[in-house]
Image 1 (cartoon, rainbow, N blue to C red):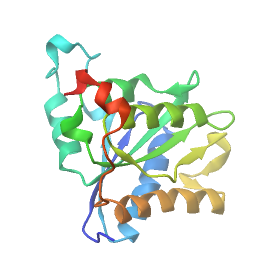
Image 2 (cartoon, rainbow, N blue to C red):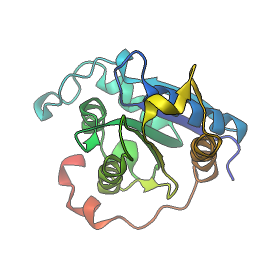
Image 3 (cartoon, rainbow, N blue to C red):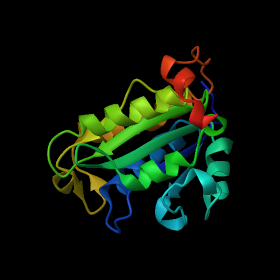
Image 4 (cartoon, rainbow, N blue to C red):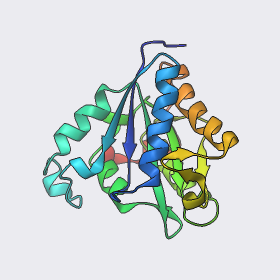
Length: 192
């Protein structure tokens, strides 16, 4: 287990009262408990215009990509919108490629106002595979988020444990031996 892993949690929500931000923050508590260093990347603080391949260094893209490249592991957090992950996170990931994510350990957390945000997690897993990232098998779904938090804290002990475990796994697997490139990665010429 890497006890000096630097883990960067990305919040794919722009809402001021974001449950996604609370969830990623709690996962980063798990990182610290496991001996890693934790940094929260709040996408509200980055100017990332809608991705245009002709202007792939627009706004704060280089600063964002640098933070991702420097991380040993990256938990991605998203609200579920229309059965998938947020456009905010999609835009941020569009600026990234293999240089940022290849062989990187990635964790997934999705939050929903209704039922389980499983499709958002599946879609993010597919994107990460296309970038040859190593996605932690343990993932976190936070359904009915409005009822899961009280004054910023998770009220369900089991769910809180799952979120903390995601952070611990990010540290534990930060230096895992990478898998061979995926089929999806081999076909993803745009990310090279």
